[in-house]
Length: 370
Image 1: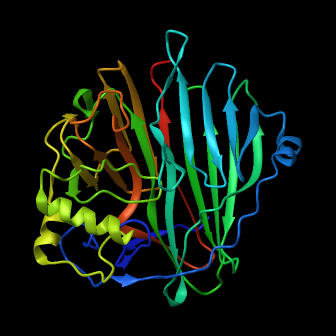
Image 2: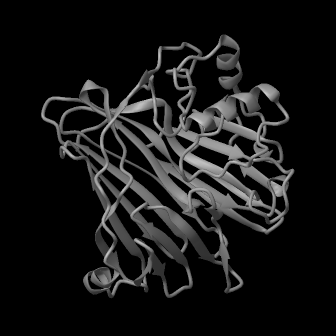
Image 3: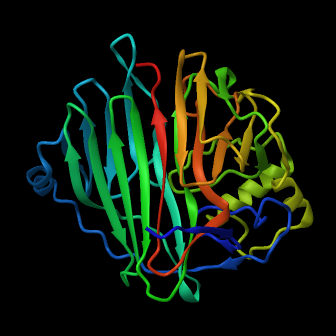
């Protein structure tokens, strides 16, 4: 398999915002708006067909309007719920040492859009020749393997309208881990492909005030505004303690983009967004509002919630950046905004695939409390 390379990401995405830096410094290149390819009409999912075709692996299907959910269940009690065709993982209930299960993901229903937000989601942008952009959003169920005794693997697939890009999204439920893996193939014989985006996970906690990130000491980071996707949960009061930050976030949300539609920022905005530093705390409390991309974080680190007395080990494969967002502790304990968001990302630097090259990246949510 050919290896992908990393490159600066100087363009503006449609649903989430790139930092203005193109590397791990403050050098700024002009932003370009990528032209969006059309998305084919999504037919209602035939739940009866899915039950008939993919039965016997520990997965059952249930229709919800034109969509459906795939419920994955292992004999040890671990469960996950995967939304189709969005590919969002709305729930991961992990088995604990005491024999019960605990929900590890935070998800909610957006009243305005009538969609599920939070959980684990993929936001990926594929930029090909002539700056035409495509993002996998409607996933087709390709295969299910495994058994409820051991592990279950659900393979989703999405291909652009010209068959130049193929993306596989593989969700694996094991006894003590939930794995989200992306496999991207550039099918072009002559053109390169530029990948940017992230896998975002909203981890439910008692409160960010009782939550700690362990193992990030001496990791370099850049401060930034939250990544906005259709699945991201952002409290309406986020950034109000900083008028400048709140103003930027409001403009970002109003344009439904990573940044202002014209792609321009003032020097002050660039400096504030790209605040950089080195983590000096190996047991970092996440009580304050925080949004950072770590560029030299270890492949595995731990989120500990002292209020719920559990932890999650977050693992990263293929991606070089770690995104962490905390909404702060001014919200209700165990409420809608009692979560922290972690993401494996290629936001500061995109990934370049040459002709016929492939790339694999993913995230592991390991339950050490079994």
